Image 1 (cartoon, one colour):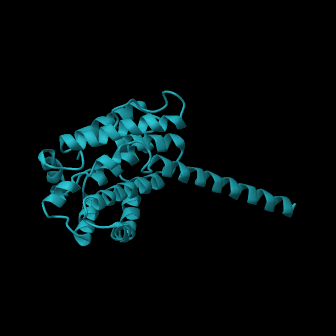
Image 2 (cartoon, helix red, strand yellow):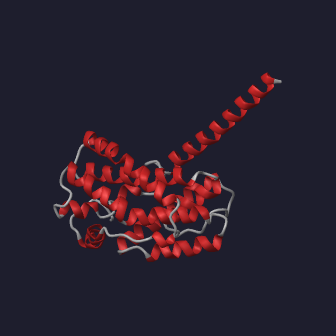
Image 3 (cartoon, helix red, strand yellow):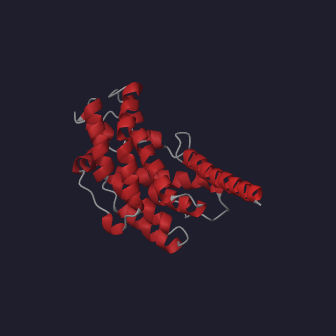
Length: 236
């Protein structure tokens, strides 16, 4: 009897680990640089910050990313993702969140960035779902990712952590291309920002739409003024 109980426990643990592993793999796939969302083409205003002399070295780059993560558009994206995760089974609620996400964009480039990437994400993520299961195209990226993660049964905080960490790595990849830092410097910043990513994901997991808002005005202005920056490498 005791042997049978031990075997049952082992089987249960293995099944749980397999589920967690599958969820991890899926998040890594959905948010990897090779997933065809076009994230490599956008700097979220960082290119303008570099041109303005605001983010010119590793220290100022880390400060820029940390400020936007905690107080800028990434925070709002995290709140929207968490809300979409909770409302994954409600298409009407998802439609309202998509409209809200579009309304929160501070510039034409920011709107294009989140809507185009959301559309591309849904097109590619559809391979993991039955036809018609995901929301229509033109859904902003955080809402699209949140709903997909919710429908797939992926833990909200894990999805948020992966999403936010991807935003940070995208910023660092942009910084490398803009010659602000090299790969070693980018890795150092990524390690330094890990606690902030985890904390932001934790806070966002229980946040509501009442927690939307930000104070990273420099990043918002950079996103607006980037529309006329010439020459430039990125679309935003």
